[in-house]
Amino acid sequence: MTQNNMNKQNCIFWVGVKPADEYFQKKHGNFKYLDISEKCWRAWCKKNDVTFVHYNVNDLKLKPVRWNAPTWTRWFDVFDVLEDRGITPNKIAVIDGSSLVHPDTPNFFKLVPDTGVTAFRSLENLTWIHQGIKGYKNFFKGFEFDMTKYFSCGFQIFTSEHRPFLEKLKELYTKNHTAIMHLQNEVVKRGTDQPVYNYLAQIEGIEMHLDVLPKRYMITHLQRFDWLQNNWQLKTPIPHFIKHGYIWFFSGFTDRGARENLMKQTWEIIKDGYTT
Image (cartoon, rainbow, N blue to C red):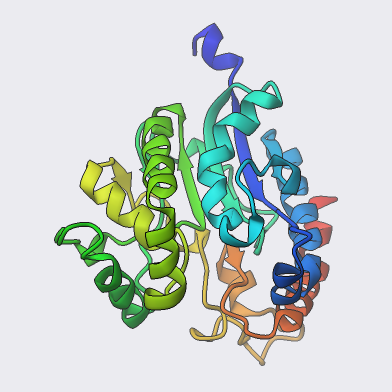
């Protein structure tokens, strides 16, 4: 390893924005679940000698918050935030604040390639994905999108070589903001950044690694796929997602209070793993 690489840091860029906007406060239950996620990821970073970076509301460059959701602005701000904090990144993992990580999770930075983007295929809800792709097809001039390569934006790992792509994404967004917001909120109604990000990545031929990390590093849709069940025969039943998964995403809960409660219960089960 060269001296320059030794000075670089692997970073968790944790998206934990709590906008003061009443619309978002109500939609996300005052963001109480973020406090649980932050505590967990900080502990994992300390255990694995990884730099924790909290992307917060003060880091947002684009206003107003209502129409520039953090799911969009994280991509535009990530490198500026790291520079502002004096961090020279090696590999960067951008991860949603609706997630928790098992204390036994290996340091995944050591398991992924040094080039390209490591992400996860997102084929859990094909109807949702198909409608998103179809809804933006005319915007991208009829580009034939390969749905089998559709990936999640909730957890990605990349290096500084990805910065030019994110700058192109920002340019596309700012130049076509009105059109994108119309499609996002009035027509497609299937996510925010994810369909557009996917389209542009395919168009630009971005090097994507979608099968490097096993699925257990991104367990999603806990309710839909029965991850919340357990082996009742055990004296101390542990939900399947905790037994078999490393990183869990508590998305898809229409009841935000239920998400907060489940994350709180999960933390109570795993927290001792960070102190032993």
